[in-house]
Length: 168
Image (cartoon, rainbow, N blue to C red):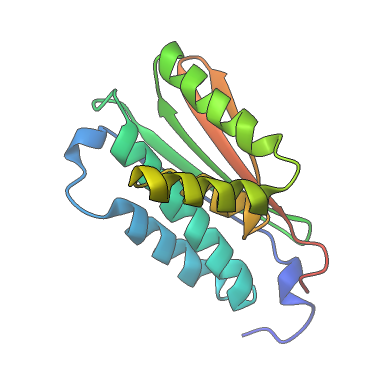
């Protein structure tokens, strides 16, 4: 094992492709999140590895629970270096599904206080006894990720970006 240099300046990238989604027979989100946690643990502090784990689990779980094109594919890309941790998850969706996701992302991205948005949503859901829908808000409010959603050639592309500066 090398002892020279700062390990947190190490660049790591990984891409995982699964198709069709209908053939997934288990917790693929947890498996991928834990795999990337272990891989990044060779180079980065546990706090960074945990952030990657949480994002991958949340985004892949969203795909598996809400995907309407079950014969489609899932792609997870991770890129990390001394500047940023970027996780991208892509899957095929209809334009209507993309619009719904985009609207949700807009509400989260434009919230002046993500923590207040999360707290208010928790209160509303408690009154309505509703479940779910908090994961993306928690990624921004608690884990400090910047989330974006794009639509390219029939694919929803969700990107979660965390600035690494100051995490040496």
